[in-house]
Image (cartoon, rainbow, N blue to C red):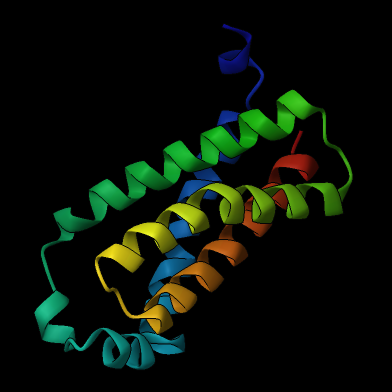
Length: 134
């Protein structure tokens, strides 16, 4: 079970919270209006209870853990290795998967671009965090 003990859990928790903070800014004041226009919804249509943020937080923590485990397992240490690993892993796995699903669901490509840019920023920053916070 070395993959459980080799991960900096404090860094994973900070990375998961970071994901939520960046998401609230990204889909709020930064790109919220554009995103809503692209997906054809209003702010009222997507508002929910505070509990709707629990699943994204858990998912963000799982993704952060996996990224930390991969970076640790590969022995990456340079800051740019962390950034690149985070971005490449997102594009190669998450980005490819969401593009495929979005294509068959006829999801607007502009929404995918907004989401992918957000994830690239988050995964790149988390990768940086994991190589620096060892």
